[in-house]
Amino acid sequence: MGVIPTALAVIMVVLAGAGLTHLVERGLVRSRKEQGIAMPVRAGKEIDIPQADRWMYPAGPVSALFAIAAAMVVIPFGRDLVGADLGIGVFYFIVMVDFTVLGLAMGGWGANTPHGTEVYYRAVAQLVAYVVPLGLAYIGAIMMAQSLSTIRIVEAQSGLWYIVLQPIGFLLYLATGLMQSFRAPFLEPFSSTIDHGVLSLYGGWKAWYWRIAMSGLLFVVSAMGAVLFLGGWQGPLLPGPVWMLLKTGAMMLLFTWLGAKFRPMTTDEMLQLSWKILTPVGLANVLVVGGLILLGVGVKQ
Amino acid sequence: MTLSHYAVVGMVTLMVFGFSAIAAALLRVPSERVDAPRGWMPYSIGYPVYALIFLSFDMEMIFMYPWAVVFVKEGLMGFLDMLVFIAILSAGIAYAWGMGGFRWE
Image 1 (tube, chains in turn green, brown):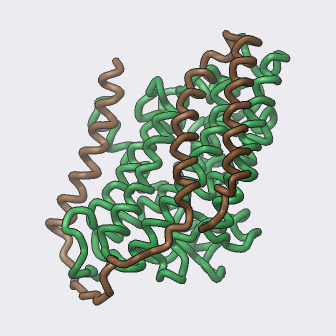
Image 2: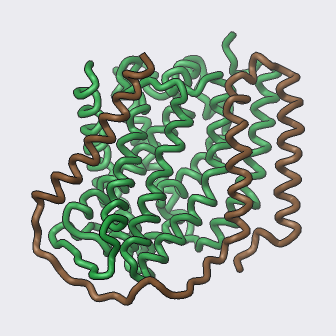
C-alpha cells in the first residue's frame, strides 16, 4: 500500500478502536462512583474560557490525538498488517504515547484555570510514576525477542507467549498500563474533585479530539500488552487480525476489571507505589529474565 | 525503505493536524462562556524530588534498550555488566529513599 492509504487506514483503526473502547467502558464503568475518562464529553457546546492561551489551549487535544495516531502506526494486526514496521518499534511507541501527557499538560496549563493547572500537575506526576517501571516491563520482552520491532517481538513468541515466561513483567505492565492510560485507580487528572479535568474545560471539536485520544489511549496500551505478552496476532484457526482484536479486548477487560478492584489512589500513593515497589520489582525482573535467558529459556537461536 | 516507513508517520501526523484545522474552521457549535478564576496562583506541587530522581532514571533507562537487544549475543558478560549497572541504580533508589525523597512535600 502507498503512504496515504496506509496513513488513512491507521487513522481509521484509531477511530474504530476508540469507539469500541468507549462502548466497552461506558458499559462497565457507568455504575462506578468515579468514572474518570469514561464520562461523556460536551461536544455539543463550544466552551469559551476568556483567559485561555490562544495556541496552547487547542494544542492540548491535538497533541493527545497525535500521540495515539502515531503510536498506532507500529501496532501489528498481522504479519504484513502494520502501519510501518519501524526498526525502533516499541521504543518509538513509548515515546509517542507520552505525547498524551504533553497534551494534558499543555491543555491544562493553556486553559489557565485553577482546575486546568491542577490537571497539568497531576498528569505530569502520572508520567513521573509510570515511565520507569513501564520501560523495565518492556525491556524483559525486548531481551528475549532480541529486537525492538513489534513484528519480531510477536514472531519470537510463536512457541510460547511471554506471559508464561515473564509473569512478573506482565503484572508490572498491568499496573503501569493503568497509570499510563489514566484509568482507575489512577485517575487523579480526571477525578470529580477537579470537575473531570480537561473533559469539562473543552467543547466542540476539541472535546471530540479528547474523546478519541483518551479512549484510543486504552486501546493502544491494551494492544501493546497483547503484542508484548500475549503473542499478538498468533493463534490457531482464526485469522491473525481477529486474534489480535480478541487479545486486545481481553487486555482491555482485564484493565477495566482491575480498576474496580482498588479504591482510587491519590497522586502521593501512586508515586510511592511506583518508586518503592514497582521500580525495584522491575529492576529485579530484568535480572530474572536475564538469568532465564542464560539458562537457555525462551530464546530461539 | 526506512524513509518510506517514516513517511507513514509523517502522513499520520499531517492528517491529525489537518483534521484539527478543518474541524476548527468548519465545526461551529453554540459557544458557552465559562467564567473561572485565572490559574495564576501559588500551588503546592508535592513531588519535586520525585521529578528530579525521575529525570536521572529516565536517562539511565535509555541505555538499557540497546543492551536488551544484544543481550543474547553478549551472554554472561552482558549479564555481569548489567548487574553492575542495576546495582548502581538500586543504590540510587536506596539513597533517595533513605534521604526521604519518596515523600509528599
